[in-house]
Length: 509
Ligand code: SIN
Image (cartoon, rainbow, N blue to C red):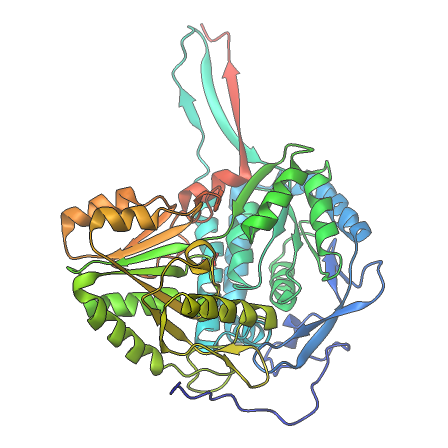
């Protein structure tokens, strides 16, 4: 292992956020919310007892602690959202677009502080956190634009004297449950569309990265979002019960969840009791195929961007890298050489390119995937072990000659590129599609006919052809099969937060 761990340790006592003082030097300290959740426009510690700690995964130190909110608080949040819906849904698309634009502006003005918060609680390098804020904020500008293009239809009628029209209306109170890997952008992708469509929301913040969610609520408040339109519940201990309440409460009409397929199945069962509208963005197991006619240098840059973004902790990360026989050795050597140059460490340190994993269990999972693959004949080209320093680090790893093992079936969610060898296009399409989760798939080729053929053949919701980076506000983000359903972002994303209503007007002849 030749990469340098550049983590440096702060020797002082960790500062806790049990008071309102921010443990980070923010230009705008009002963005550090340590009181608890946000109900009906007010910061509150809720009705529960106890608190949970938020740990900086880059150094293992406690960043702050927040009160454990409860199912009772969640019911209240839903009631507030239900009340606020009465007026919010009556606002015009232009009014909502103006507020979304304001949120975009405030987020952009405070982007450095918001990035610092992400790096502290999630661990990703500051450059990536800054990129996430740009990406996250872009959903507000995108949906400000989409809100005012909320067109209905006039549909030719089979009956004389009747005009069929459609209007699109908000679904109602929506529950939003987001993960820790993109503490800002996974919230904004849902929230911006939900608000644009005229819904009110209850957000369940991830216990690992709640401060980013609370900062978004504060920005929305500053931008003029009325009380009760956005409510945030924070908890670690009561997460399953709060999720169940959001899925079963009859006043909630939609649940939007990003997370694992396992939890998605639980939430779907719970939500069936009231037949809620659902959008789920669940697990992935992305194939990344490099054909022998690819530009190898571009494919290596693509696999690095795709596989090692956020240290491998994204649902759209490449999980299985298939390389065609003729270029396999050259590709694997060059990839390993590029990965050796990574600088691993705390995200706020100069020069760090790759940060920690979110917690110790994530590190253990990567280790178990490596160990099992090696026991079945894989070779470690670089990395392969956890890094024994405070925080949760794993060496960026490249394995070659990977055979049938857990990586084939499960997301590693860590910095491990598993290389497989293949001979023909037909064979690799079969291998790539041999999974229940079809979120993203990638391939590199310079052959235009193959490009169209393979893009059509991959059973996924999103294809990156000659690119390893597909995410932006304008694209429909989502998967097929057990990766979930619904689309976020793009012109399609708004519809997931709306009901289409027919208005048939008779007596016109
Ligand atoms: C995810 O990991 O689900 C989100 C990744 C992205 O938005 O690019």
